[in-house]
Length: 637
Ligand code: F6R
Image (tube, rainbow, N blue to C red; front, side, top):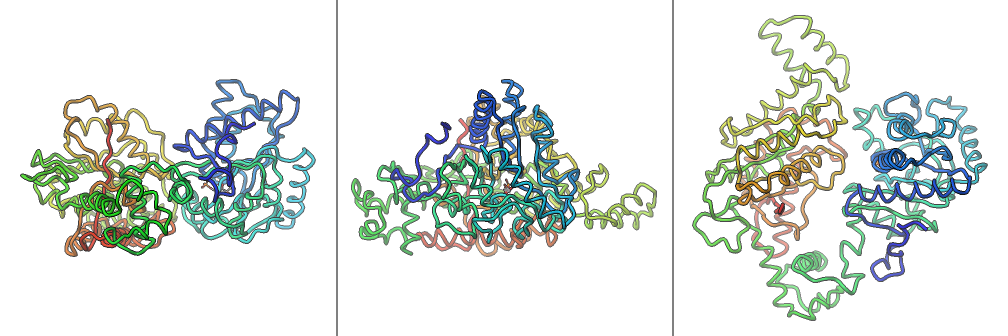
């Protein structure tokens, strides 16, 4: 039996009583992927021992990549053979040539088949290059081929933000079989980064149907990270609906969702465990979570919560060991003490309950910014206060961010340059023509260098506006980012060395960094991992004893109230000043290249987020501020 199935059964234990699909939560996607790869490897070996073929149905996308990496490892290190394996892929874009870099054919070979000993004749991937009138017959044959081989032994799935499995978009019926389907806008938007813009993403795909998938003997669905938490919750705890085709898995007897901490965070047993679990461990953190949750539920501030509110909302056990009066005050103080207008510490004052130390009065500070603008977007108000309070603030831009400068912006600078200085050589002209002709991202050293410089100069304009001397602004240009493409290089010692050098040189008392731990593939996640590696390496250095690390959240997500250790309020004037500092990043205004599904500009999103946080604090009964920036302390020792 699969080791994964030994974990909590759905609907049976008290914690899982609201869950209708078996799921296992891992600390991170890497550990989860290893467990899944192990199950697949065991199945292949079991089938080998019986002299049988092993029929796998495979998924593409970001979610299974580490599972495939791990299977390749097992093949190399343990000699796992794929000779008895027959694969069927779930889907393929249509129309698309198998040789296209973005086709799922290319994906499967690049991520798995090229590195294992599978027989090419045993690989089946729907073809995206059929003629329209061939599709129906082709799909029928695909189904028949699966059936002839005795059906799918193991089905690997990802889940789309529309809740799709395969490309079974909302509306797909329980009985659907392999067919051509129109892709949802959201699905195409998610693919737009890889295709270099939504308009290049095919509008249709060939996909196995829901019923094809449900016939598999064993199903594992992988879901990692922030983007999946809503659909994971809906699929597992809501009713079955064709609006979220993953919910059909509720009816499958042998399926498991493999999740990480973030993708599982909306499940009731995680989000509000007191509703299902009688054994919650009540420390100050869980108390804060429960009390702030109760405030939202009852629309009351902390100090107005009554015993009756606790009892009526399944929190009576909190009243068992402590009076509600004391509990309310305890949590109120916990939240209240996160607020400070002195992010670098308040000189000459008792700092027992303040988020930062009073001493040393003037601190050396590093603000790490993954791209040249995250500093002002995410903590522009706090940055300004640190400078105004006389701390020695350094901004370190980790990557050049040059991929996010549009061709128009680069062209504009080249045209101004060649017009003003009468430079009209072939070199410049050929770059101009390239940029005029196409929207593609050019992996061209010269063009990327202009883009890098545009971002550096914008960053300098912004930091000068905040009041920083240019010598305190550092551009690391971490090599992992410099692939010239959307897909980045793997990190190397060179990246970590650059991080170590700058930290050792400045010897900071405070480090601020983008703590977007949830984002599994983005640049922010790579940058924070590099910082953690660097802290680990430097932690024995003497100066590190005095170094505190504060994590801010990037443009997308916010900390939960119980996660916040420091909240810096912003007045209306400070909000306007922050907005202006963001505006200096002109190449990122109006034409943000990688906007995702949120069409608001960065300054709009962040203003709303900062305002919303202040509102949350106000609703809990704290002082009424215009906006707030928040931080979580990271303890690295
Ligand atoms: C891919 C597939 C899709 C993806 C889903 C999630 O073969 O069938 O259902 O699994 O769109 O994609 P990622 O993993 O990229 O988030």
